[in-house]
Image (cartoon, rainbow over all chains, first blue to last red; front, top):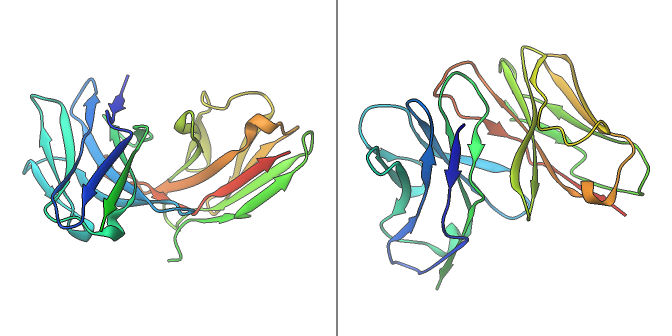
Length: 113
Length: 114
């Protein structure tokens, strides 16, 4: 069965500093990995995905993520955090077909001015 | 396209009442998913459809929950009778065919059962 772990419930970072939100996954085959962001009282918005190819994936709003097969990780990163990046971030995985995405529990990012 | 549209955005109902949540997926998408979000359990898949046919409803918590997709542009999630523990945010999402496709989420319906 597929699963995703986001080991940190909360990440605090100062504005302008780099940020990392961690994600590890477990699948039986090749993973398809996704990051979503949720702002208060809003739905989930897609940020980026890894399907195949380059391990470093770039997405919306300056975010990027690095796929590491040996560590089964897909950490979300941004070189310089903004206060407006404060939100709830979800990592998700599927291992084949159009099966539903399996989500982690989410990590709340707080960027402090 | 306006994206996935859910209604209502907020619903407050009394315990024992029937509640119906509605979803209009993005036109042309083959898959529709219903998720529930709570603080304790995070995002849980309730049921999903492919071309209007329910594929997996193992996430539906009880027989009180039912979902239908009568056509490609409309789906409902019904709770009858509702209970306070059903209070949550319910999301509908849709996606096109393809292994690497992401799901597009609606704004959600915040359900409060008192």
